[in-house]
Image (cartoon, rainbow, N blue to C red; front, side, top):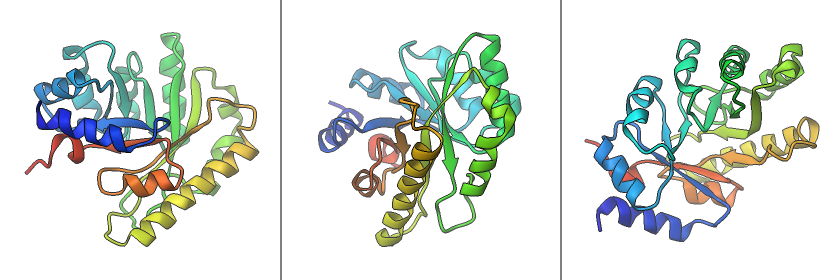
Length: 222
């Protein structure tokens, strides 16, 4: 059994059944992705549209692709035909484009709202004020081809796990606030995507339903 299969089995054995594992395959080649696929993995995450567009036709059709990076509006039309979820919605303009492109091909695209929870300035994401503005916008209410399924966020890249825990707790609180205020009648609004290779155990403790793991599955790329 390959290291990739062993790594996958180990992670799946230690995470609860209700937590979805997204294997982050960015920068990985087709053989590595196929190893994970043959070990039973079906959900993969990519953060660059160009890379995803190139890989998708070369790989099995039942792979569920999650887009997890900053998405440019001019790339949306290339991924809407096949993407299973866009986890990184961080502005109204991108939602409008996803809705427009999905409508043209008669699809409803599951999306997560990405929040800036890290105490560092390098990450994309909404704050609560921006999210409320987005949700009260009249054009948001008219969207027919988008399903908001929850929230996504990235903690600070730090060894200070107290800080990481605090940031994940903050995202869970955001999720709960949005659920109560905006999505109480939306059964699909149930995902909290947080936790990566270095911190997914903490994320799960704080209520994550979806973890995005790359190096712990595929190994570090030097």
